[in-house]
Length: 379
Image (cartoon, rainbow, N blue to C red; front, side, top):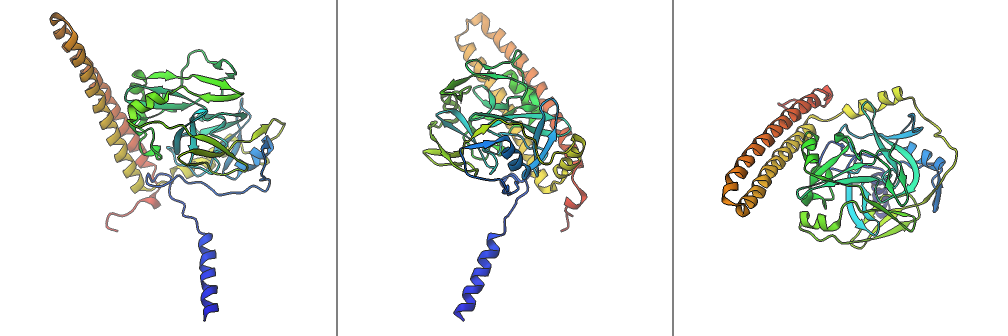
């Protein structure tokens, strides 16, 4: 009898170890989807090659020949709203703001190389060999913090920084959150709808400063003091602790554990690469397979964030003007109050346009839901 019970328990344990719950990416209460894959060429080493990178990431996405960058990688199994540097958290380390990803493969595409965007294919990653805590630039105000991946066509020169002339990144490549949510471990719950970004960009300043120390890039375009003022929480610096094998990044109170190998330059190519047209056919259907309930929940959260942040901007404008009126000469006060009313009306008009744009985009997204994902109201 005991022997049969033990065998039964072993069988249950073995079967449970093979079960992995993979939640839908569009569900805000869960972590993003990712495939679990181990390359035949996986090994433990302080140095890897481009060939290894091609093999490793093949298990998580597609390689595409994309001139002028050569072979680029696109992650598989992610939803239409996916954006780099969202599913994870920011940690202040000896190297500045360091991105800690929720993905097991995050040690590679978020610290080496750059992310670009294609209107038909979505986000793609361009390999490179230099490590950084995060390849992003910043925007911030007294309300918002935003960041965007540095485009792959922007050169970086040691001792100089990013070599770009107009210092411009397209509005749609940014991510913005309220500054008080910057410390959150689930930043995707607090991302402001992109219809607001043009307004937010106009009231934020750019932070693209980077430095190099001991041949390492320091991401200091956003000061920890700025984050402390907005979040009301102290920013604690933690140490980077390197591990010796590819693995998901982990954070404790005192350290961030991550894999940071040296990548050896070599002539290499993916074993399997697909044309852009085929990549579009493979990637797009998976991105449209969303659940009606999760989409409705996401839309409600977007509407709430839009309305809340719009109100914050008007309240902020009123407070600023009231302070100016208090110290202004009596003959200037009425003029400032009139200017305030004009600015509020202009801002409200912008806000109304944002609401209309959000409604139009959400309606289009509802139309892409697959019929099999629609649930009957009676059920």
